[in-house]
Length: 99
Image 1 (cartoon, rainbow, N blue to C red):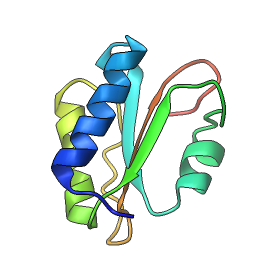
Image 2 (cartoon, one colour):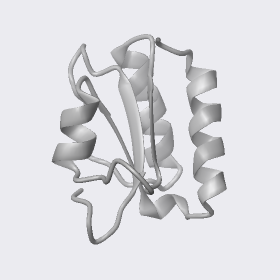
Image 3 (cartoon, rainbow, N blue to C red):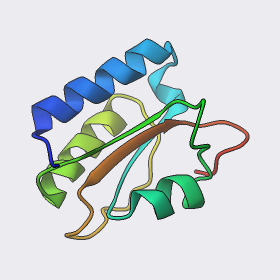
Image 4 (cartoon, one colour):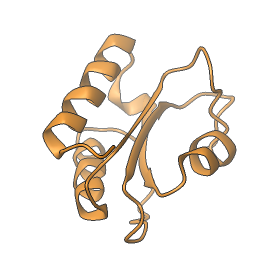
């Protein structure tokens, strides 16, 4: 189920704030395949780890959200995805993950 921009920002902000971890340690990106990108590509553990993902209404909304987090100091790729990249994800970078 896709969510609006305001809801996604609020949910990700809440999650990040709960972690107590600064923005500069978070990586934020977009994808069309969360399993492949987050868990296989970035190597994020599925349990007992700080990550979150939400589906936006469209790729432009997802890009807007991603850009907002990059401007707020989060890490991320300069990649813009494609028109199917509607999932915004965020995770804490560590020695066990790959940017």
